[in-house]
Length: 366
Figure 1: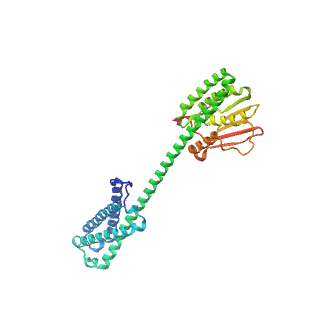
Figure 2: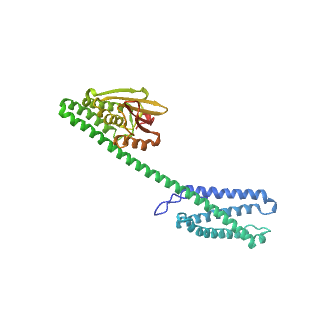
Figure 3: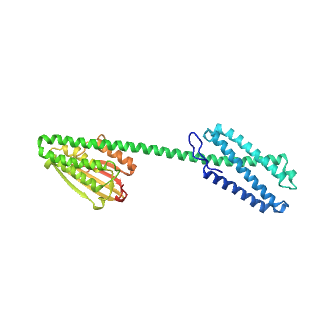
């Protein structure tokens, strides 16, 4: 029995310690089993017990050596990499030769070491043929275990490589989504600032101050996968204060944040995206403005973020907005199907965006 070394291109890797451990354990187990059989069954035949023990030990030792040569041959010829229909004739021929050599060693041990009365009977061609078949079965079993372990490790390595490639692709996609999100947010802010510069320069200055705070938060959180909800809320408050300058009395904001939710972590700019969507597609389209209600709760190991805004969906929720689309994609990459964002009509005259993500406490945030 053996464990194949991890396959690699070019020069063959050194033989691992695990291979020798498995070889030693496997053939030692066979030796102990045969010694047990001798001690129980053959003690009454008048044979020289010490010589039999030495003979069995030599046979198991030669089996270890021959299986190792078989291992080196398979590794050098790379039979384990071939299709089965091409590999099995070569492998069977090698096993047959190894069994013949083992059979010859058995004959020599019988002649020169074991002086038994049944020696002539033991050397009959029929007996030797049966012995050869036994050795063929033994080496075939060894090769089967070898190839099974090799195939198992090959598949495991292939799965690990596929997972690494998938992780790299997901990280690249996530970085791309985050790179899209910040310019999108900045573009919306600059549009609002451009309108306000002409109408009210003094308020435009205040808006620039708020914008600088938001950009500082964006830059600080850009290298983080998670931020605290309380930090995200402060950034959203700065954003809404900046938007309040533009909307004036047309915008009303209500906060309802559960105390236990403050220390929960979430992807940066997630709540900001939900609020920005409510302003852009809800409040800004109503001449009379409206109200935004922001709620956060922790329940059943999930963080629930709810943003309600005045308005109504006239048809199916649009999937074309870059903000919500990116937010959904980010959550899918980070949490799979454990996180969701749902856009729907809540009550007559109100639209709701409900986001749910698994709870990750502050102490685990890097």
